[in-house]
Image (tube, rainbow, N blue to C red; front, side):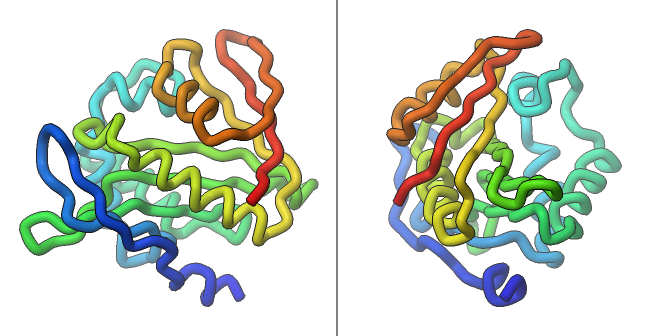
Length: 186
């Protein structure tokens, strides 16, 4: 089942931008081992600001080595982690433009944490919303009853996205971050 799930393409839709490169198609799919180079390129493209908002610590842009390690973590993770990619074709090549992770707790398999990151040039263009929509379907399919997300207060785009996807949620501020808890529904 895991192999079948990992090879399924979920969405193939039109996506355009009003500024920057135009995407003719954006595809959402699971990550594969052969995505390691594309993932490393993705991580190398992220700004310090985007990395801070995702990892909650000031850090310079990825080096080749750190980007490769993060790519390897994602493509060689165990069954407790599902990784969805948003990919787009530009110049005849597939590029990763967004990543969503579902991390299942080993002690409670219906309780997961989620993380999302979109490359700087495509932020605010609906890629995160597309990834979240597919995550909801995947969570419902897998019987997930509770989802957790931790967001820095200054990450206004992520906070707006959480509001827009229509979940009923609770949130609390603790240790400098916002902790969201919500129940997915189809």
